[in-house]
Length: 168
Image (cartoon, rainbow, N blue to C red; front, side, top):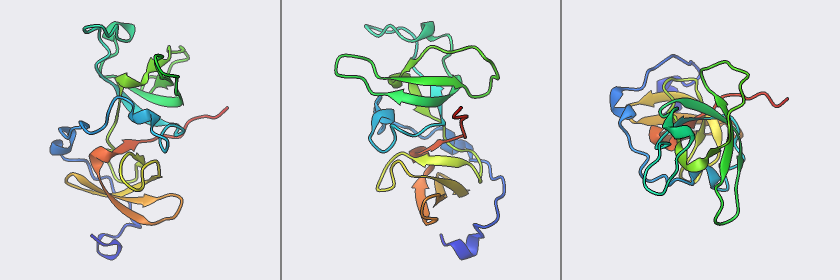
């Protein structure tokens, strides 16, 4: 891929193929939000997963919000033997209701689904960098890094959708 032949200056709404939705985050452990380059990122869009009670895990709110999307406002890295948590709000539900903090292990990144999406890179040398998706081809994405404007190629399952958050 190169910038000249794909016209990265133009942003069109390319939808991610179904095969991308099946990509696994198996190589991201439950503490992916706590990695040094990601922990301070705000506005990450995540899906609630495995939040129901199972084994010794008491879950989060009885698993009632399994599969719903939230926005991470901040992440608190706890000391050993305590649960690190995120302050969240609903992604697609406008409400003033305050949600309880959620343990980080119940959050999985949401893959961007169109060109022009703001993202954070979750793996590799650019981990923690934010950028804009310029093109999605199959399971790969071209991301323009915000800080340097360099073009970076990444698997879409190594990206997390990011939205602006009100800092007030």
